[in-house]
Length: 314
Image (tube, rainbow, N blue to C red; front, side, top):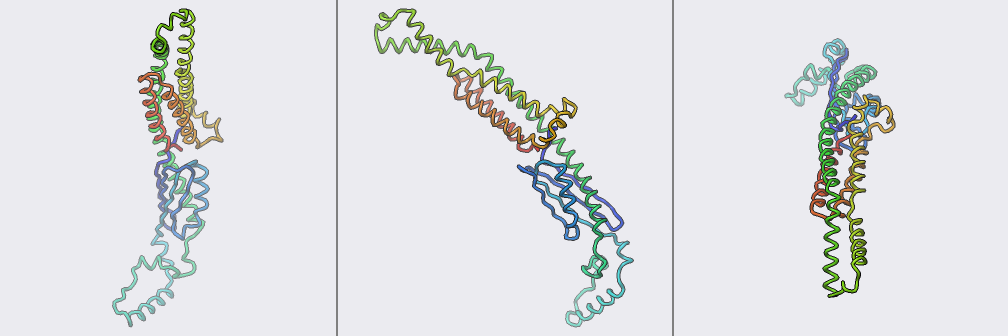
């Protein structure tokens, strides 16, 4: 299935010690780049979160943000009266020098650093909460990637249909183009020989002249024959449709058969568009008429549009 690299997911988990909020954002990147913005108290959760994301995502620049709020009711019963008395003494001493010093608020007392040795967060409980929130946010992220991927695939399929129509049009008119070029070349050769050697045709039999003209015309026709390029473009279009719609048409079996290639659709699409662009360039260089030249330009435009969309595919 085609997936985008741009998506967002968030989750909120409540535990006895408080509430955890986690966000996962993903944008384009050639590889899987993970960035964590966690409070120091939750740094121990980075390793399980990294393992979770690495196992489920193939590419993208992924940023993880987390914040927490401890439960006031839980912490209220744990405030140490001895520590509070010590704090009051320190406040009184400070006011002898700075009378305007304000007393700390209750919420500040709950989160006061180092107020007691057992005030630290429970690593196991908060790590489990981080993983739980990470799984929920990751589910949202993957669903968003799939929805955006289907929109990108639809855009590329529309462009692919345009490429197919251009290829079919050129193939339809190719025999007539070759015939017209042979006739034009034969006429030019006759005119050139007559100009360079007036009366030269008197010394050349009609059969011999016709053979020479036909030989030159055929050589030129071979140089402008683009049937091979058109055939390769058709082959590339078949592969493109397989990449964009194969998983859906096979009920998801395509992904299981290509387990080792999971997450590489974007890179394969990029390579495929390089090959299609090369064929379009060759088609333009061989163009023997303005119609083929315009067709080559239209092909390059459509291929570039698809390539831009593929930059966001996982």
